[in-house]
Image (tube, rainbow, N blue to C red; front, side):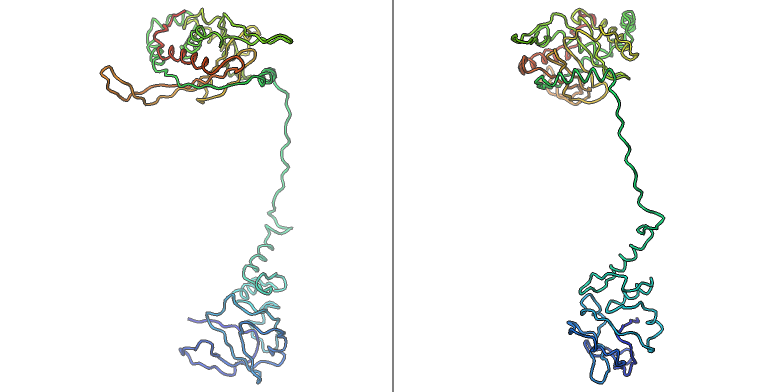
Length: 406
C-alpha cells in the first residue's frame, strides 16, 4: 500500500532514514530535505506551531515529523509559504496559488477544479480552508445558484381573489343566520335504534300491494324521512313547547306562541343551495301521504320551482344531513322557532340483547344519532330529553305507528 506525505516546502531530499519495509518510529524523521534560503521556514514564522509538522536545523535541512495518522484536523496556525522556485516539481507547479497548510484531500480538490485558494473563504481554525469550504464554493458557482444560470427560481405572481355577489339563496341564508346569532343554543344528542324501522320499510317495499298503494298516492319510494317527521309530530304532541315560537315585541314582555299545526320544514340540498320547503299539518298525514308530499317538494326544489308559500310557516325544522354523511352535528335554530333536529347517517353496530329466557346474546342493530339544538331561553334540557326519548320510542317500534297512521 502506498501513501503520499506532502511537505510545505520545496527542496532536495538529501537522506532517507529508512529502507523499504522498515518500521518507522513514531516521531522520528523519515528523511532530510535541503531547502533554499528563501524557503527557510523560520523566515516568516511569527508564532510557534502548537503541533509542528517540520523541524528546521541550522544547516538548512528539514526533518519531517509527520505521521501517517497525524494528518488530521489538529494542525498549526497557517502560514503563507514562499513563492515556488525552479525546483518545484511538475505536479506541484499545477497546484493553485496560496494553498498554505491544508489537508492533502483539500489540496487535491483545489487542483481538480482549478480553484485559486484566494477565492475560498476558510472556516477552519485560524481561517484554514476545509474540504467543506471548497464544496460550498463549488456549489455557489453552479448554474442553479449563479445569476446567469439556466435554471433559476421562478417567482410566480399569486392569483388574485375573485369577489362574487351572494346568490339569492345565500343572501337569504346570510340574513336568517345572522339573526340566529342572538339565540342561545344548547345541543342534545341521542343514539336511536332504527333496526325495526329499516325492517318495516323492507317488508313494505317487498309487498306488491303495498307498493301499489304507495304509487297510488303519488310516491315512488319510502325513505326513513316520513317516519322521522311523523315520530317527531307525535312526540311534540306530548311536549308542545318544542313546537312553538318566541314572541318578543318592543316594549312588551316576551311570550311563547304554542303552535297547533305541526308544520315541519325539511332542509334540502339543491344545485342552487340550501332550501327549506315545509310539509304542512304533519299531524294529519299518514306515512304514505307524507312520503308523497316529500317527493313532490323535493322535485320542485331540484328544479328551482318552489313557490314562496311552500317555504313559509315552519314551526319545526329537520335536517337529514345523514343522507350525505356525518353522524353528530350542531344545527342552527332558525328564528322564530325554538328547536331544530338533525339526523345523522345510520350504521350497523353489534349489541347485546336479553332473551325471554334471560340469556344475553350478541345481535346486529342499526343506529343513528339524532342531534337537537334548542333555544335555552324557553326550553330546558330535561324537556328536550323527554321529547327525544318519546320520539326514539316510536322509531324503535315503528311497526306500532302503522303505515297509514294519522
